[in-house]
Image (cartoon, rainbow, N blue to C red; front, side, top):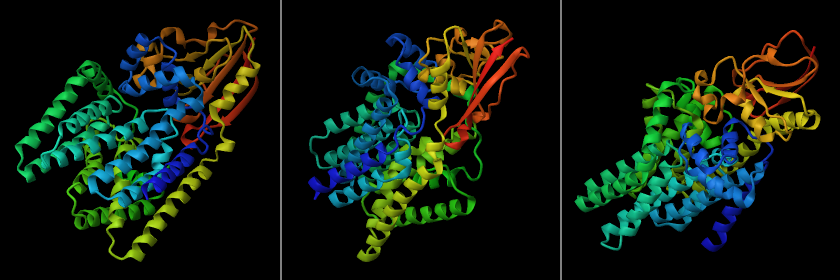
Amino acid sequence: MTPVFLPAILIIGAFFRFYNNTAIALWHDEAFSALYLRYPWGEMMYRIGLDVHPPLYYLVLRVWSYFAGASLWSLRLVSIFFAVLTIWSAYIFVKAAFHNKKLALLAALFIAINPFQIQYALEARMYTLGTFFALWSSYFLVRALDQQNENKNFSRYWLGYALTLAAGFYTHYYLLFTITAQGLYLLIYAFKSRSIKIFLSGIGAYVIAAILYLPWIKTFLAQLSRVEASYWIPPMNRWSVPGTVWKMIFGGQGASHIPLIITSAVSLIVIYYFAKKVRNPAKWLIIFGVVIPIIAAVALSLRTNIYLDRYFVFASLFFSILIAVAFNAIPNRFARRVIMIALAAVSIFAFFKNWTDLAVKDKPGMAAAANLVNQNAKPGDSIYVGSSFIFFTFKYYNATPIKPLLYSTAKLEEIPHFSGTAILTNNDLITDFRKTEKGQTVWLLWTTGFGGSKPDVPKPWRQIEEQSYRDAPGFKGLIFVTKYQVN
């Protein structure tokens, strides 16, 4: 069965991830991924340290760009590549944890068609590299425990666990919650089996991972202090967790309160059923993989707002696996198949509905705005951008010889780090529009997204024309290109 169905599932997963994969213009977060590649290696690492994310994804992307370039398609292809590998990894992990190939195929299928997983496989960011390591570290953990229990050669699995732990934390800091879930499972497993050797082996794996992380620890602490000082993520409310549960199942941009309540209630029932009916001890690794990241993020957000839906893309892996295993435990064969087929149908429906809701054909965003400037700006013109949240995206798309400048009333050291100071210099800023010369043509790009608005311009600037382009998703607002003549 596996030689036929697993490749089919991977092809299905790849299809959904390639679908419209460049239809949405590159946005602020992705611009960092793209622009880091333009620096020499040393400066790239320095500027990554000035941001708030670890370096591994950027290193992988840099190497990739030497072979495939830095086009939007190429940048996002890295994410798609690891997204498809994540589907395969889910099969490997579930087969090792539950010793059931059919169940492993089912879990892989649910992840292949999960709208939330697909949604973040379309961004040139580190999410799918993180999902890949989340599953492989889990695989090495369950294999190490099984092998050591049977007194077989287990050292290679503990080493694999240590390496994937370190790689995961070098990829995204939210994977610390997944690592915590694994650690709790390891602790309980060692206690129940009354094996001090298993406990010590696990400690050894964590020590090796910690040693491998030592070169980055100073930078991590600096990034942590930066986040604690100021961050852009809004505070949680009572709908935050239900909203996350909805998105982990259906993806998209959210739903109204009643569907959120229903979905959360049904999810709790499924988790309870899973915990009660499934006998395999690996079920606790799955439950912890879902619950611990949510609990930890909520608890830490009482101090600093770090709760963000997309960061639960790692937890959603285990939620998809939990659903697959829970439904597979339904004793009635007919009911089991009907429910599984219904969920698969709903997932596929949600995927296409999410794309319909985005209406990407009518929302070309910065790709169109930059194209207008590229085709019409002439040497001697000036290009100013009114928001940092579109400044870096324009820099990526800019094909003119003109250096764009970011309009800012604040000095570089006064700009919040989340506005992009990691890749900003004083030479990127213009603080006074009055420095423009008479007769000059000025192109001003600004946005209504991210709380933005049109900057005030000097009275001698005469507006010649203005074009606007919607961006997707809707929170990115409109991008305006306004052409001025300085009188």
